Image (cartoon, rainbow, N blue to C red):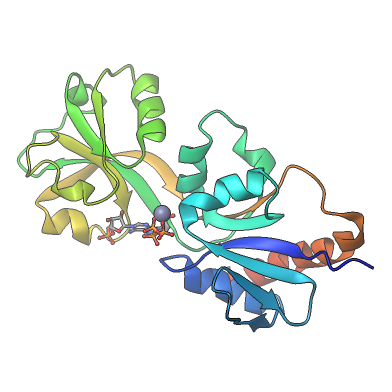
Length: 219
Ligand code: PRT
Ligand code: ZN
C-alpha cells in the first residue's frame, strides 16, 4: 500500500483562487481545510491541493511537484517563453479572462507599434513583451516592474506600459489608453510532463473528465 496522493497546484489567494476552488468543488472534490495552509486535503479522493503563489505554479507542475495546476495563460507564457505551451495545457477554463495590452498616456498620438521605437516600456511581462516587440520589428527598452506598472509614465520611469487589462478602469484612473493587444489570456489547466503514478491513473483520468464536464456546463 502506498499513501501517494495526486497534487493540484492552485493559487492560494488572488483573482483565480475562488474560481479554482469552485471548479474543484464542482468536480465533486470535498476540500478539507487543514491546519497546513500550504496543503489542503481532498476528503473523498487521494488528492491534495498545493496552495501557492500563481508565479510558482508553472515550475511546480513542469517539475512534477504537482501533477496538475490552474494558472493564468499569461503567467505560463511569461515563465516558459520558449516552450510549446500546448503540450502543457490540458484545457482552457473560461475564467480569469484578461488581455495584455500596450497603453500610453491619453495625450499621445499613438500611430502603431513603431511609435514605441527607442522608447521605454514598463511591464511585469518582459519575456512576452520582448517577443512581441521583436515580431513587430521594434527596438525599445523594457523596464521590468513587479507591480504598480500603471504609474510608470506619470513617474517618468517609462513612456508606455504593457499590462493586464480587464475592465480598463485602472488605465482610465491613471490617464492612459490601451493600444495594441499583445496577448489574450484566461485560466488554464496544465499538466506535468510525466504520467501520474500508475496507482493514481484512475483518479487522474476521472479528474480530467470531471473538470471537462464542469467547464463545458459553466461555459
Ligand atoms: O499573490 P499571487 O502572486 O498569487 O497573485 P498576483 O497578485 O500575481 O495575481 P492576481 O491574483 O492579481 O491575478 C492572478 C491572475 O488573474 C493573473 O495572472 C491573470 O491571469 C488574471 N487576471 C484577470 C488579472 C486581471 N484579470 C487583472 N485585471 N490579473 C491582474 N489584473 C490587474 C492588472 O494587472 C491591472 O493592475 O488588474 C488591473 C487592471 O484591471 P482593470 O479591470 O482596471 O482593467
Ligand atoms: Zn503572482
